[in-house]
Amino acid sequence: MITSRRNFIRNISLGAAGITTVGAFFSFKSPAFLAGANERINLACCGIGNQGASDIMALYNTGLCNIVALCDTEMGARHTERIMQRFPDAPRFQDFRKMFDKMANQIDAVLIATPDHSHFPITMLAMSLGKAVFVEKPMARTFNEVELMMMAAQKYKVVTQMGNQGHSEANFFQFKTWVEAGIIKDVTAITAHMNSPRRWHGWDTNITKFPSGDEMPSNLDWDTWVAAAAMRDYHRDFINGQWRCWYDFGLGALGDWGAHIIDTAHRFLNLGLPYEIDPILIEGHNNFFFPQASTIAFRFPQRDNMPACDITWYDGIDNIPKLPEGFGSAELDPNIPPPSTGAIQPIKLNPGKEIYSKEMIFTGGTHGSTLSIFPNEKAKDMASKLPEVPRSPSNHYANFLKAVKGEEETRSPFDIAGPLSQVFSLGVLAQQLNTKLVFDRDKKQITNSDLANKMLVGTPPRKGWEEFYKL
Image: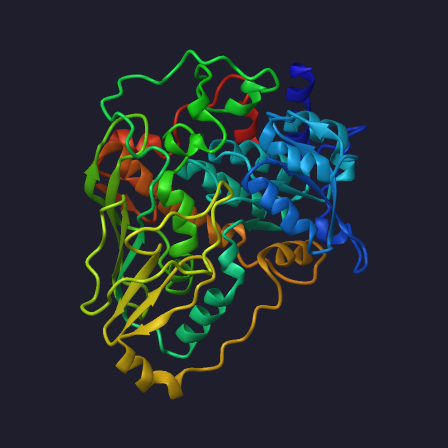
């Protein structure tokens, strides 16, 4: 079966080059042509627990899709039960390759809500089959994987969306409108912060090797879970959300929350990629999992008529940025959705950002939370000058499905979400190496560290997974 799957992937590559593969299950037509105005999109779901379960129900509740396949490497585990019970007739798989092998001709679009390190192979295979993809944030784990995903989206001309859901809510439309009206302009600095406790806080940072020795769950396909990453012995601290702790598998607090906090600033201020990434503070550095606290400065150059701008990222419970005088503290924003594993714990400062322009300060939360002008006196002065902000015509999930039907364009496609995800991967490299990185934005290379430059690509894919990097 392994050999046939490899041939299956190779045949996809041949088909893309113009060679017809007899008996193939797939079509290279855009999914936008696969469903009419009154037809539902046939959606396959990879990763059906925790955030995946939330995404599946949000997509299904739009009334725009059918759930036609469920895939999870630990199918039948406790966190997958909700979705299995909700869609008992959907075929079930533990290996996404087998799912596509058997059902590619019945699938229009794919949800990918697996751990960060496995986004890439599933997404690349789905796109090469002509399927639209909704991929949870961040797009992928390494800079190069994101680059390949952006190229593949253009090559296969499929609908794409990254799951930073606030990019379809009020903050998106407000930020866009205020930039176009000249309210937000001449921004020179942004602080962004996520100071909630993280899963790895309190771990022993003197670690010298990966943990091992746990008994593997009987229903876990560990080989497929590891995907293209280096094989590790199974441990409970690698699965069920714990994967986000480790450099091998996730992008930490930055990759988790950065897409919900700095996405609109990154997009509408045309920031692109930074020329320097400086880890100002790394507390509890080690080679395996994320620091106990980080302060990372991303420096962006002047763009057209926009001045140079720094984004400074803060994570860690007590690593609070310096706030504008009189800012005070804020209650937890009710608009911030809780994580799939429970409520956000009370903290000293809400997740969010402060945006400093030459004339004003804008403060905001995360996800769809709108900006406020600070201080209140300035806000009152500006009240009559603020333009009307349009309402969102669709949430992030409906936007994706309507785009597959040809009715809208996605708001976070790979050409928008890709550079944002690459900012996160550069920040994580600075965390992991605990060193300043100088980045050539044109050549997309790190110029002051050969090791860091090699890590843009990452370790070679595990044997049997190389073909996904050739699609």
